[in-house]
Each structure stands twice: as structure tokens, then as C-alpha cells.
Image 1 (tube, helix red, strand yellow):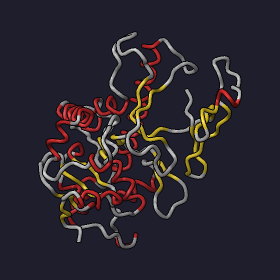
Image 2 (image 1 turned 135 degrees about the vertical axis):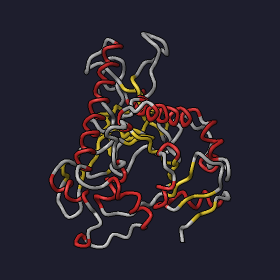
Image 3 (image 1 turned 30 degrees about the vertical axis):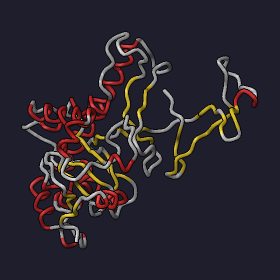
Length: 319
């Protein structure tokens, strides 16, 4: 299994050579160069693909004041998540309402709980890919992924951002093409939704400006966008059946992005729109907890908030 890109100190980078023909040999320059601003390349190297629209629990993550990552079940994380707001840790300017939202899920065992679900998510994805190899009669050497991109192609770590599935050119051969891995992880309750605009539709044809929903239409747009509607339905079904992170006996206590911003002692910075309502409001980042279910939150990165405001959306509680 190969990918075209790898990272160099967090920057996306591609290693290329002259495009090769069907015989595997480099083509002539005449054959590989189409015109003065287009040439054919053969991509080499490997890299990572970050799934769009989903977020799985962390197994290891950095903890402020310590070098490198630590297992979430390490003594350091367990102690920290017992109470990250202890005075001796220094000031942490989270809203009182957000702290009140977090406190019941903190405490002893929060780190172990997160690590357990992180390991389960990893094993779930391994099982899905292995099952696809078996279904297609392929091996590690022959198996390929199919990637569908949205607006952003890379994240800040140089990882590709995509909806990803097994590469199966014929929709029903040898069997019906399954849902993407992104969706199958949601279906199993192995992942939580993490819907960040504008990366919510792999086949969006409209311009970025046209993709901004009209104020007061969030619920309608969420219902009429097939990929978004399906993802949200899969999450609701997993919750109703108590699958994975929704296990009523021992649910996932902290959402993955909460562990990340707590570990870095950062403040959430993405605005939030409630997809369950047809309102015209973008909530301030720390108010995401006012929307109980993660599949109903559409996060708006700071760079795009002015675009929404220009279209008539109102900012609530930002000042």
C-alpha cells in the first residue's frame, strides 16, 4: 500500500521523477510533458491520511510541560485528568460553563478510559481493512485505497485529508462497494463525528462562497447533503444501540478534541453551528458544549468565520 506524499518537519512534500509508461520505465520528455505548464510525474514515498469528518480517541498524546507524547493511561495523564484545573498547574482561562461541562467526566480513570477506546478504534480499522483485502482477494502488495478530497488537501502536519475507502472500480464487483472507512468507523461507534466546515462533502461542486449555507438553514442543509445526513444517521444509530464509545456501561468520557486541547492547555478556537436547528447563530468556540450531540456540531475555523458573517450569520457571545 503506498501513498504519494510524506512529511518533512511537518511540511507536505512529494518525491517525484519523470512519469513512467506501462512498462514501468521513464517516458521520454516529449511524452511526459504535455505543454509549458504541465508535466507528468511518478510519485514516490509514503505518508498518512487523516480521515475527514471523524475523530477517534487518542492512544498517546503530548502533555504540557513534558517532552514527547505519553500514553493516555500513563501516570502523568491519569494525574493530570484527575483535575487539570488545579491552581498549581497555573491559570487556564476556560469559561466556567465549559469547566462545569468537563468536570463530571474528569477524575480517576479518565486517561485509562480514553486509551482503551483508542486501542479499540485502532483494532476496528485494522479489521475493516483486512476484511476488504479478503473480500477483494488481495494482499498488502496489491491492495489500494481510494481517496476523495474536499476543500483542504493537507492538514498542518502534512497529512492528506480525505474520505477513504478500498479501491474497487466496479461498484458491485466482487461485491457491493461498502461505505467509506470514515463512515464505517462511525457506524461501529469506534469514532465520533468531527464535522469541520468546509470539509464535509467529498464531491462538492460549488464555490467556497456558494457552499456557505444561508443563515437559518443549517438543519435543512444538513438533511439535504447526502454525505452529511448519512454520517449523522450512523452516529445516532450507534448511540441508540450502545455501540463502541456509546456503551452505556462505560461510555467514552472525554471527546478526543477535548483531550487534545486540555493536554496542550489551549482554548477551543472554532465557532460552532447547531445542525439540529434552523438558526442564524455561530456560537463562540467554548460554547460547543451547549450542543449535546457531536453529530449536531458544525465547527467553523476562525479563517472562515468572516465569510459566514458576510453572508448574514450572527456571532453569539464572542465579545
